Length: 311
Image (cartoon, rainbow, N blue to C red; front, side, top):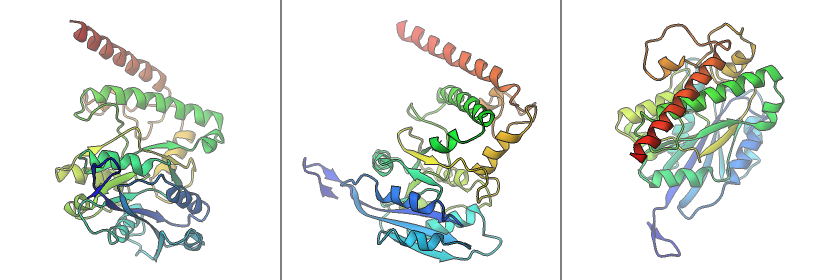
């Protein structure tokens, strides 16, 4: 604890950010530069950034070392059965966690092709100080890269954004978490206290979906998870990534699949809301009508709320 200029007690935390990176020479310097340029805060006792350069055949590690003393680079060759997104994330978390000491210290991770908002850490600390054990930040696609995609591809992504926005508004009515919030849980923006990390036995390491598995483990251990809209990162629109089944694969599939093929990770409205068991899949041909249906339900919900408040 320390005292702020106003005389209030301030909990000072050591902070470590884990960045798994495999052949990310083209991205790593921008990622680290943004991390190093984050707004400072009296609540930060120390800040270290750990790059886990795993199984690289390029100069990712060398480029990361150029950024200076607050960046620690760990080079590692993971065994074939661990050389995947989950294995790399866990190894990066472990290296970063080794720099922390107290249960209140903060462990974060982001992706090498992602850059954080200037207030990423400060906003995250706000939510941890409010009593949350873990924070799932909101990832947006980098605007310049998004504009470089094929127009038809961009149009599909715009439809999906509208659909997910309506879904979030509908699911929020069933959520115990304070509104506004989102429902995204991805490796581009994860934070949890060291105590929480210890309680879940470290990061789960499935080949795909390690980010969602971590938050599931936090909830299973009784931890509180916050999904704030003010904790933001900006991630790449690249269509050929490092993780099989990751964001890049999904973006690529959304752009090239046939209009009548099922949309990956986009369940129909009634399934997403838990009103029906999985049936016919949602396609891009069906998506505009599904958006209209979702928005109509949002309007009905708001009208009912206004009537209840008036009554």
